[in-house]
Image 1: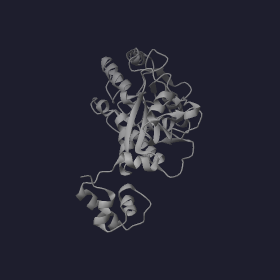
Image 2 (image 1 turned 90 degrees about the horizontal axis):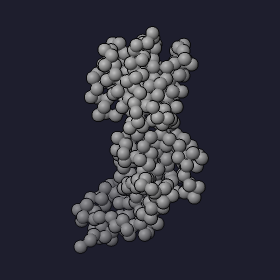
Image 3 (image 1 turned 60 degrees about the vertical axis):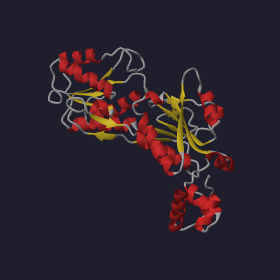
Image 4 (image 1 turned 120 degrees about the vertical axis):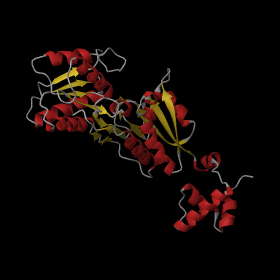
Length: 334
């Protein structure tokens, strides 16, 4: 037989409202001892929350819906979802995602997510970019994760790209590197912002920021790891030139992997001849390179946790862009 709230209330000698508050985070006031006792009785009786009934009572299901804009194809998807799911579970919520693609537009996917009557909806992207939500859905999405709402209508959580590039460039300079080349990601907002941070750090160090060597990693106008790579040609030309770099900053860890191979091909040693640093901290790449790669770790899990806090808060968050810090991961490539 199914255990009900009244069964638990009778065993505990309290009201049904008190039981609901202890198990579902309601407003009923009680001591922590009473709360723990009710939870122990519920577990003993095998109580399972009737999500459908609960949803009918409160007008929403204990769910957070995520519109996944290419997110599932990203190696960092698990970090965003883990951060979001961990915080959601602590609030007795579950997370589900629906992918954007296959001919479906944003409006149709958001409408599909809304059919599940979730408590809140997030929009998460594979990489840092601008997203224009349909005007009629501006109040439907509670937070943008790893992307910005183009019209400033939704709170957006993004990596602090400029600060990260400034930090890693300063780190290279403090390690004694003065001629730093940057093989960047063309056509991406992240690449544009990282270049700004790179040049700022050079300028602050009294180096030639305006004449700094910034090169595109691929031939296409917009970076893709499937596009024709220019890394080998760039590294060969740099190392054959009159002013060989003593450090190469890479737009991401995949580019760094190619830089490693290109440097070995021309007989350069890492880090003795050329230091290499990067962004992302894609662990399967960064830790397996020889030597292991110094890189800036993206704050994906932190973005997921903060997104859950914003979505489940009693009061609406200010509609602003919040920049989250990367973390420098020091390894042996510098």
